[in-house]
Image 1 (cartoon, rainbow, N blue to C red):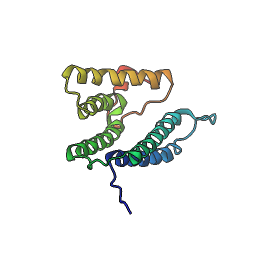
Image 2: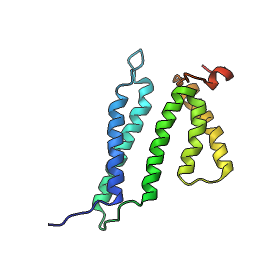
Image 3: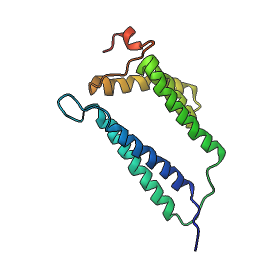
Image 4: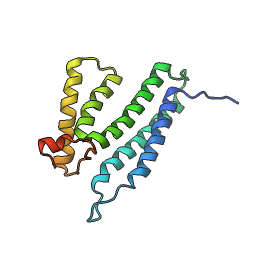
Length: 160
């Protein structure tokens, strides 16, 4: 009997699959539009389903790989946990300071975690990510932005 060690692709795929499944279940908790359409939950559903499928593909890739790799090194695991903490902080901050400010802070931090160290690129992300996402989701698609309880920049610049 041979025992197969899990390689990093299986571990990453399993985590992605679990997050995708949980997010998919949670997405169905978002209320549909008043007219009964999918509305604002279509994006969380699509993103969750994508995570689920990509996670399953990664697991299959890892299981069919001929050689096993050592478990991820500590720096990789610490980056994963840092990204998880950043995402939790982003959601909390969004509830307090609104979408624009929280995204302007989280976008460059996420890029920094992925290895971007160019100051101009990080500052550009802080400005362009909130602007572009705001234009796509809140202006183009008409999704109502999450407003901050303490302060919201949309109150100052005259947003919805």
